[in-house]
Image 1 (tube, rainbow, N blue to C red):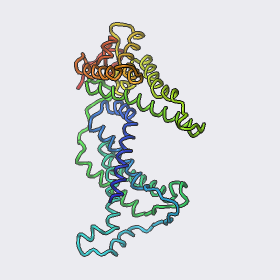
Image 2 (spheres, rainbow, N blue to C red):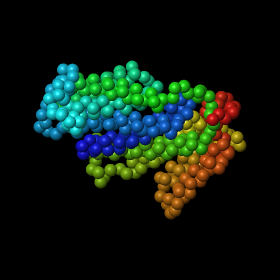
Image 3 (cartoon, rainbow, N blue to C red):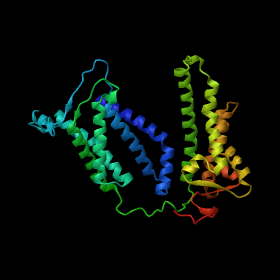
Image 4 (cartoon, helix red, strand yellow):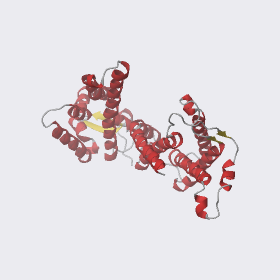
Length: 357
């Protein structure tokens, strides 16, 4: 039980990290396909990422140590039934303690979230759930049978046809349960039509901007450090920190600046289908000013170190958050400084459509 709890904790941690890392493209796809995003949809995305990691941890981990015993293959359907009958089960408690019963029940429960998420998030029914359950289960069993596709000399987990059947049944059962949670009538939202600029939408775009700086900067810094250590074989204490700082802080800001100059949107606003519309000055002046007063100013203050830099950054963030609620049309501090109005990017030819809720 302790091993399963540990594997569950690993799946949650890695799944949440993966969900955050892929949050920006997920939000962008959701706005373009569904026209909006909801808190439940975000929670579903996190649940999907955690579930994907749980499949990996529970079916492939822990990895074997040297000297492990190779296992074979079980191709007899319903062999688990015969195993369950061979175990004493005169009382209900003994049935629940039956290892074969536990194995089948666990395999069914492990794949129930797959069918549930397929129906609730992607509106896919029993056929897709059955095919997905069978396909993913077969891939997992094949991965186990081949020793993680040749990474290990032989299989360390049993290929069991009963697992395939139980996993597929679990996906179907999850799809059936999900019927209780799916709205019967379809969505009335047209993804191609503009929607209102809300405070939540603005904050989501700002979160994506900050997340983009952190993720791209982190990946570049890690990549540069790995290159120095494993390709150039430079000792850790001699690593070039100046280039690492340049990659981590300034390259992501340069990408944001180029994006804003080219489109009038930050990367987060592009994901949430928002754009700035200049009203008081030409776009060639308004866009760089908006960068400095927005995500650019945040990134610069976060990267530099000088007296009271932390206090100034905190004030800047607070001002940016407060003006999201207090400014006209939730345009925020950066758009106010640049003399811009925010509009849905689906508004054609710069003509503002009536706000839709």
